[in-house]
Image: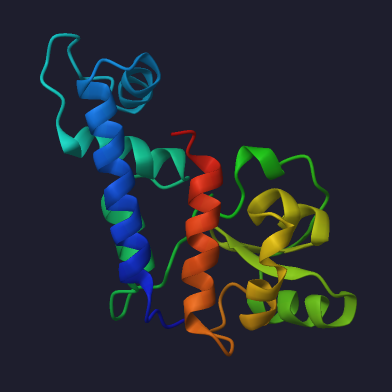
Length: 175
């Protein structure tokens, strides 16, 4: 997978982390609770650091760290992207999916049965329209078509994946 537009998505997330940190600095309880949930070492009287917001944001989106999220979306040379649970948020756990441990097999299943092919850690899942509606909303179906309904292929519009990632992140973040 190549990523020509990961930088715009990372910039969007940096803005979200700034907003989160500023809300926490303003004493907003929801923002403070999110920072403390993923930064258990924060003392109640400690100053708020932007790194706390980066970590909370990354963990909320299913990554272990901001570095892992950033490396995945910037597609560092020689790095195999690990989208971890980004494409399998809690709101999508209720759906039945077809799972495969092999990408080639998953592509063949998707080709035969339709649906959308998404990575999850070291596995692949074929999901239906209802899953996609919960993940990104029905208004994004053309973007999915533009990447060939396969998250790991470039498709005809490289910007489409960045657009989808932004919508997924915004739906997962409550601020």
